[in-house]
Image 1 (tube, rainbow, N blue to C red):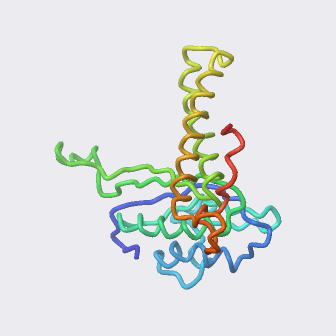
Image 2: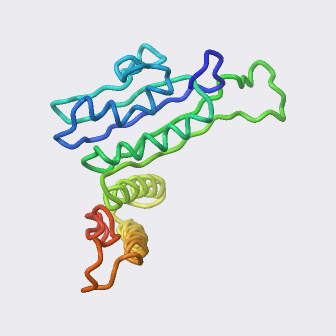
Length: 211
């Protein structure tokens, strides 16, 4: 749980498109790791950010959206909370989404003469959620293409980068095929009369760009 003298300020930022049948109660259950960490008794009690100018955690019911621009004081144990949150959001997400998490070391102050050997605990991670592996890989692919193209356009015209994008698609397509094949190892032989296969959610389709 977050403490009064917590060494880190942790900012969670992202937008998740939810299934149309998801209610506030469903979302409250999915985000329980967050509001429990904040010491709250319900989501509404923890939805406000540490900084008043941030919107916090918002459920846009008509648009079926979860909006997060939320800061909390905490420590490295918050990473476990993020793992639980992502697993829960997988169950209510309609499409894949990226969630950015920034850890700011509130105790490290270079200007005040911290030891030169001292290391800041600042960190930045991107987490991915989605209803199935294909939707998650799609978001990962789109972000990678955006980053690579943005970097290479400093040296090449965008029209010249089609081969680079195709190479990225090939890599993700192979990764997806490897994932499906690994999951199918536990699938019973055809006609064996066994239980359902082990492909998992969305195992039979690839992200739309991965051909």
